[in-house]
Length: 459
Image 1: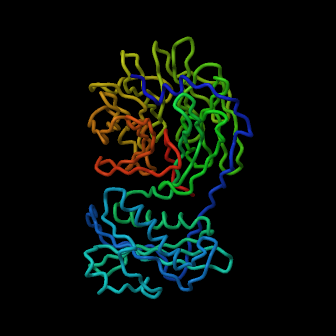
Image 2: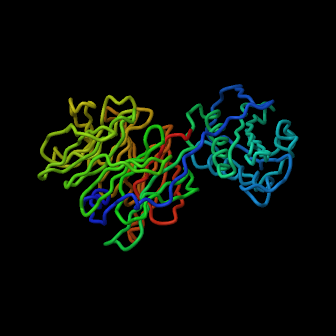
């Protein structure tokens, strides 16, 4: 059985892609200003084990309930929405047991920095998140976030941000990242975005568009119109660009889309089938696979275009290519042994070694940002998302559905996203799972969705 992920690429025929193929321009993400107001600083107390921790997330308070472009109902209503976003962010990572604002008392503005401990001490929550939102004279919003230890009646962390009204959800994601990082000891990942392929139309004539959304599925946008087929998007390491593959009249082209300017740049084109472009960690190089005379190998090209260098040269199909975080190694898949398996080589193409020796086949490997694991699609009856160490040991399955494939890592290396194809309907949707394998979540998309790519933390 040929994986859907690659059979689509092999069979694509579509209309030309040109500058006008780009849809609505995606606004460049502005730097979120960290506010240094009185009382807003970062503090840390003890270091207990926070797993399965109860967290109460109350509605954010406001000093003046006034309408803003973010909410015509006022900053009071916006405060509840901010807390709901924080709640949803923290309930889907497998570490915490949050309670959302709809089930909690609403604190006053004065109580944000002086919690009513008697109220919260009776609610079986070890941690408390308070926040506020204020409308500024310049039209922007100031959002503050506070984390408290209820039993110690002590503050653990606080931070604040100034954002334009359109970015109010980013302030909520940053608050959730603050809580997550403080209590888990891990890097943040929630203030990030996901690129994916939006699919519509009948099975024999699918329209595939490049789309992006926030890490929780909000703020969805289509980037391309669908007049040509887009595949395999990937964010650049600095978030400023998107790399993707487009098939034109059966001929593939690799483009880089500049998020700030809305321009796209052609990196390379060919009459040969081409697959899976990927960035190097420093953003200077692009890996891709190309089939020539029935043999598929992995190539490297400058991110600015130019001549390509072939890194593999063996009979069969070598596809993929994901750099290790330090850029010294590349993990890829190859059928040189007779079936799809995972291999590792130096970034130069030297020292190619087989990594997977377990039953079944292995495809779409992706190196963790931490460097400690490789996620991949295991094919053995069904398609499952699995992880293995860089040495090939410690195999673990994270999902057990009919067809889960194409894993992509969260920026902190704790959550994996993938796409799932339903057995009977063929519907494709994006899911995520944490490294325990116990916490799955489906992300909302307006149409069928495949091949997600998780971007880095936003600036």
